[in-house]
Structure formats: C-alpha cells, structure tokens
Length: 268
Picture: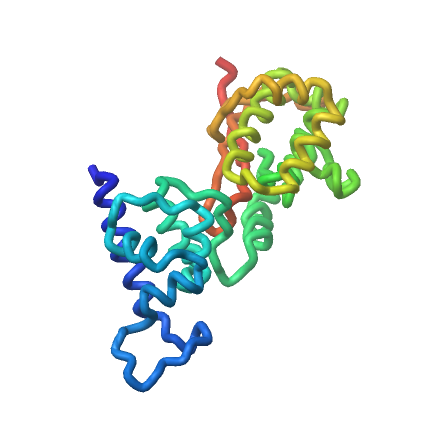
C-alpha cells in the first residue's frame, strides 16, 4: 500500500516533469542566451504561482510539507495542467479532489448527459440527470410518468430537491416521501462538501430553508449519505404501486453532474 512518503515523492516527480515541459516564452519570460535549464526554473514557477522559491523547492524534493488545495490550483495554472493532471496532484496531496471540473471531451458535459438520457426515451423506467445544485438537466418520458412533467415548471423550479420539498405530487407519487426526501437532503449534504466555496450552493441552501421547514430541520440534523443505489416505492394512479431501484451514475466527463437510472426491484 502506498505511503504518504510515496505520494510526496510521486508528486515531486510529477511537478518536475510538468515544469520541464513548459518553455519560458509560454509564460511570458525571456529565455536568455545562456539558459541551460530544461523548461522553467523552480524559482520561476514559484514566483508565477505566488510561492516562496525555497518552499517550492522543498515541494519538488518530496519533503514533508502539505500544499493547500489553493496552492495546487495555482501550480496547475502556472504549469498548464489538464483537468486530469490537476485532479492527479490533488489526489496525491490530499487523497481526494475538491470542485472537480468535467474532463474535456468533444461535447460539453451537459450535451453528453442529454445524449445519454435520450438513449432511454423508450424505456418504461425513469432516467433523469441533475447537477451539483440538484437542478434537473434532462429526463425521459418515463420520468414524467412516474415523477412529474418537469418541463412545465418554471426553470428555477426544475430541481429535484425543490420538487421533493414543495410539490404535492411528490408526496402522492412517492410512497415513502419523507424517507426519500430526507435521504436526498443527506445525499446533497455529502455533495455540498465537495464544493465548500460555491456561493450558488449557499444560495440554494438558503432557498430550500425558506421553502421548507422540513428541509431546515433535516439540514440542521447534519445527516450525511453518499450517493448509492436504493429502492423507491412509486404510486401511480393507473399503474399502481411499483418498486424501482435507483442507480446513480457518474463519469469524469460530466462530474459533478450525475445520471440516475431506475431498474425494476422487488418490494421485499
């Protein structure tokens, strides 16, 4: 199993390799006629990132110092890291990534999600996608059948948590409405922790608190759940009660958004 020392050494090697591939002219520095350093000098990286040259040298030497996430992002900017590489240095230094951006693909994250959901247009089971704010991005016809026709709602209300908290139809369609909604609040708390400085999340928390006394109570209880599969019982006026297993899916190409599939499930 890799140790903290292993991770520090790997981070040091990786930063040096990225430093050596950046030429001075790429960052607006003169190369000079006697320059023998491959890529940028350590001192140049440090100045461009707003760091002490000695501190950055220690970092590249794999010494026992702990760079903050802000410092890592500053280095990522200077070293022109891709999002894959930025996530890598965060994982080496902290074991996790905060505020991951979607990876670059030939389509935008939102378009990719819409293409995925569109593949389930003929499915009898709901599929929907939402972002880190719980805003709904796309859904199939079965989601309209078993949840609601979210397209008729004003855009600010096309939000799965807003719908659960405020819609009378949510209480009618979900047999265990309180359990599902409370669990959804707990799941969202876990998601919010990945975006600690996002002002839009803070605004959403304030909005849901004003919207629902139940949300305010559950939020203050500090219950946390990671996204996982679970069984939901749905009630339909014509189709009766049906159990479905929700399966949340994520991909680096559209994180922090996610797609939620529904599969048939036994009630016992």
